[in-house]
Length: 103
Image (cartoon, rainbow, N blue to C red):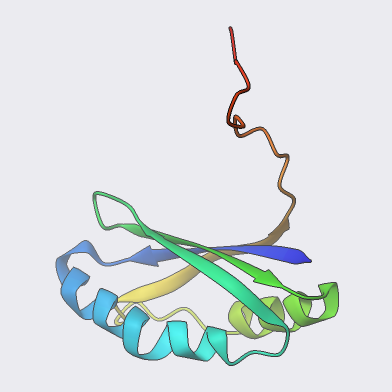
């Protein structure tokens, strides 16, 4: 499995419009991509950024979506723009049930 991290820069004054667009267009588009497994969408409290993690079955599937996302031209008039797209690895540092983390 390969995971993409996508960061969108948002216009906080148009947050309602942006969230509606994410739900109605971007999330359905992502789910239709070849190799899509799952995604997690996170909106910053200040509504200036949306971070999306997307899992794909293969590196090739993830690379195709990364290329398509990065190919979107920036547009200052739009309510959102792509900030960055990168392939990431889970370092598995999350505590597990029964595991005691001290530090």
